[in-house]
Image (cartoon, rainbow, N blue to C red):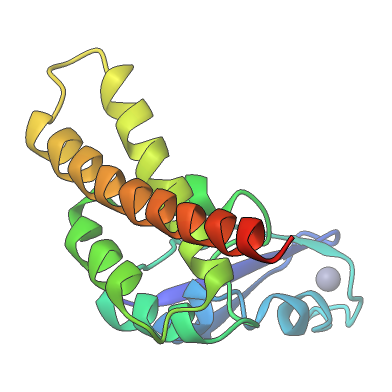
Length: 159
Ligand SMILES: [Zn+2]
């Protein structure tokens, strides 16, 4: 599969820019394409078409450990929530010590949104997916509550 931006100049000319999968996923060429002059009239003004976002295991792994990479500058959890076929990778990343805290927040937000999508779907919900996410989040909540108890006891002891 190829990824490309089409930039339409105000003069009507259309320029096409090829991207790698990684550049497309992480919007790495956005600014570059915006700043490219039209190949016909050399003006820089124009509108850029959106590109298909590839999200896969390798891209998610790299994303999870690099703060500067994002699939979307805002509402990233909503974008990730569309990728329910990758739920096992999400869980794997949440269990990995390397995953950055900021990325954990996005992953958990995306999982909650996936349940929301299933609940509000007109057709039959994917109950396996809902159960899988629900059980995983419940486990994480218990871990968090245990941790909270320890901290509270610690504070109590020293105050
Ligand atoms: Zn032009």
